[in-house]
Length: 525
Image (cartoon, rainbow, N blue to C red):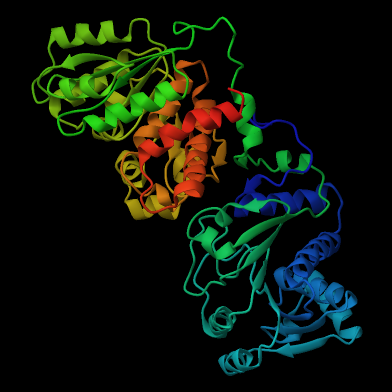
């Protein structure tokens, strides 16, 4: 059992890959002895309840079903919705004789009870479906989690007609055509209003663009014992407030600035002093007792003029010059008495800065969060990065992650979870891969996906604020993984709160810093 995953009963926040859900089903059936047809029945009943909620007083339902297990879930739904008084027509995307296993069993029951069943086995049939799809709700039960290539032929035409209908769509387990692991939408993908996913959330439903195709995700329990998740090796969770709140210790009544941590922010350069200022301010607002900005000589005057509560030191005079013994002594002095370091915002990768940053990271024994140019510096010197022993959090955006891994940005975005997991394990660090639904990975392979945040965050400086918040939590004593979890969740939640007040257009990073004390006050921190 993962050391970060608490014991649980059935939990709707667990996320799974394609292979993990197969293992989950196998254990439930072969080791627990639950007949597969029972699992299908439970899935269909749960999805039917969601369909009825979406219908309200309306009654017309069109179920588009494939011949496999996903279609079998649809056949179960058809039976229960008919029994609930709905007018149901079931469309099968292949000849009924191709149905097999539990799907065939449930199709036979539907036929025996007189269910209205129509075949759509060609593009001509799909065209007719588009003209005669008269329903208040369409159920997508065509393809399940096994899809890993583009949907073609008449199935693509069927999906196109469904999407063009304008009728609300409920996807069964996962929208047909969506990759369950990566969230990639292939050539034809159902654009669902809602998704009833079974057992646990498929990770592709949380990763973009998959999250946009899934609509509102409902997790349907299917009667599998909770310990099956652990037996299947599942290590992923959707991050929640319940996970984050317990990570904060209660502030002692006799606390003072010396007991609340001292963060060194190594950041800023000429023209990029704002990055250092925002990281430092975010750290102060997140509760750090003391913050020192270590920066270049030419950036120091600007930073000092903008920071009242923060101390400022020069760690290198000429960013392009070679590192001197004097510079190294300054580094040793800089880390004395500090409890954490945040390195990277606005630094640049000039030769002197790169050498200084690498030397600092190699001498550290206290935890650190590395962002922006700090990541780029590590990417340029893999052997130097291998000599770092301090506990670390890396917070790359996809482009920085591409440089760190030697992959393209497109490759990173196409496989966000596995690339983040493997990179965290390789470097033995915690990694936050930023973006819509940021991915957080621990060195031991555990994954959290963060649900907070919104598109209003598409403006400069947001990453600097995140670095400051995570650095603050490290300085106050959180472990790197917990600091990453708490910092990422709260960072997005701040943006969500700001958007409720100000809207998405024009949201800026300093808005989040201003909102932070109010959130912490509500949480009793």
